[in-house]
View 1 (tube, rainbow, N blue to C red):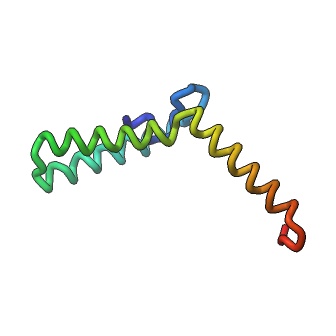
View 2 (view 1 turned 90 degrees about the vertical axis):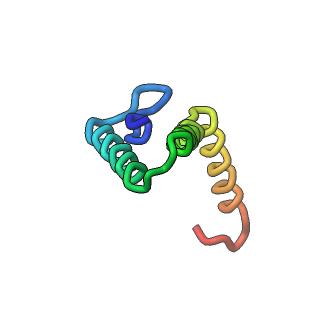
View 3 (view 1 turned 120 degrees about the vertical axis):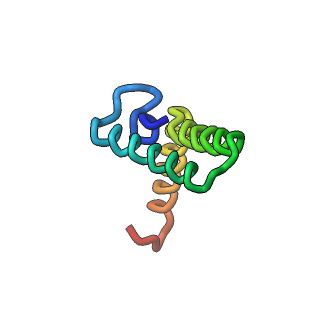
Amino acid sequence: MAALLGGVSLAGGRGAPLGLLAGTLAVALLAQLVAVTALPDFSTQLLYAALLAVIVAIESPGLRQAVERLRARRANAARRRPGALP
């Protein structure tokens, strides 16, 4: 989870050591917050599972490509409108 949070791609080929360090620190901070708040174990597991699901959904290669296509379509439509600002 720390690697994904730090920017390592699920598809591979992307990631940096500094990102891995940042992801690890973020997960450690989250673990400390969970320990301080004394959440029950099942709540902690649900929190981590939800965070992992969000990261995987965002990093999903197909989802990323779909979002990029949508942005490109919107940019093209904005350029075609008369009177639109560049």
